[in-house]
Image (cartoon, rainbow, N blue to C red; front, side):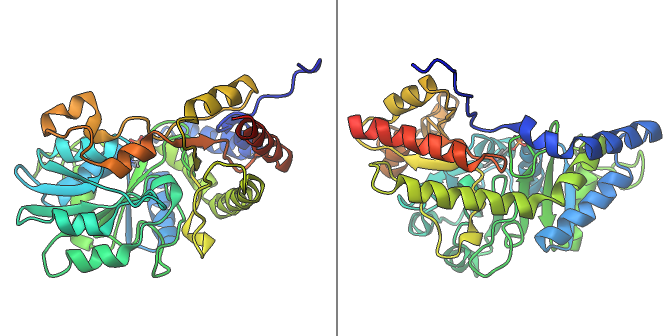
Length: 378
Ligand SMILES: *Cc1c(COP(=O)(O)O)cnc(C)c1O
């Protein structure tokens, strides 16, 4: 033990980022409070336009959370009782929750081991006459290869809904941004995401004018004009305070993503030959925005490494320890252990290590050194 305690390195440090934008954020919050326009107002309207223009779609519809975004998107695409929606089991729970809210049946398919993203061959094998939609998840910030999915969906009248909740700014195979490829696409601005609010927020992007109108109505109780409700909707509004904060942060997103990529490259160099499997960096690194930097640790050593790093003041997380098909609440879907072997194997190996734009080179070194030390001894 060293006499001077070394500073802890958290998984994500939101305070470090806030320190860089504090004055601007506080001014914006003051302006919203002075105006007392707290719900759909100038900031939501402006942010919707600015976010759509950033992603490269005609419309963005700000909503209350990423889960709201998925729920409204799925509903607007006409998914209903008896329909099947194909997605991965290796994702955050909300992807599948939203399918269940529509009373549709989630069909959970395998991932490819190297990318840890949806396996197009598994999607093709899971198509039935009841398949209504496919939800690719750009997990960890890496854009899914959309071309094979597009080929499967076209001519079959199957809708693609992107879950881009972890991929703000990631490019896809054809050069467009994640969130511009599907018919409707979903973002979360949960506080830890690459673009994070200081509360709950999300957005839906689309190029379809009719769907955009429908989504704008759905986020406000299905009303067309005030107090006229042609459909039953939700209270799923983005609020003015969050929109004002998001506008400030959106202007820095590219710069923050660039720093995340720089950190990923440094980790990649320093972890080579250490015995852990670093995440694959796509040939065009702009296809990854490193929401998380998720390594794999084989040989049943993951939990011990996690404990070791914890003891050395290094924060980690497991994204995600239990695949959806093995969650207690999903038991009624009838999946069994062994149904998705790649997913289950990966869930036992993944470990996310500190990743946020304000992480210093020195901190990256300390994390990598600690991992190397543990792996050498085990
Ligand atoms: C964060 C997240 C969501 C849900 O977003 P919330 O804003 O927390 O409701 C959905 N899907 C994925 C993949 C996510 O990471």
